[in-house]
Length: 215
Image (cartoon, rainbow, N blue to C red):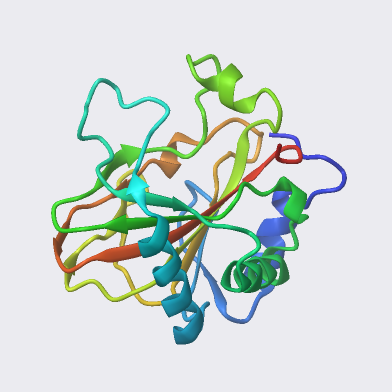
């Protein structure tokens, strides 16, 4: 994945994150994966949860592999004009330094009991049926930034099977990863499973970045 000169290049972003005093790199050679605990304040988390509840709808997916239950959560496209979303975007920019033009709109997800997002990657498979449709303008997805908004009573973990890591929801915890390898090819080791919620409800924010400006 090659980025525009106006964007933060993958190696620079990884170094920026690794140098941050609150960010931890997950020890694996298989992917560039980081976590930051307590990234969002309780007040901001509550405001974002309210926005998700206000506008949530059934989640969709580009390719469900013929499985109608592949992604069963609910989704909300967050209005960038909302004060809480502006605050969120400012915090993300302060952390990663990526020009906001390269970001997709922030998306919220809500998982009730029994809902999940089966093992998937965030990139679009080159040569696949949806690659040209979704990557023609802004290019491939580069980095993913995902934030847990609340405590889940049971279940709802995010499992990276190839890496051998499972992350349990913690209010305000951010996970982020590079969807590509160092040579620019997509990285199948970023396959991850939003596991079923067993008790309670899970709220998540996801922000994806692209090779070129969005839209």
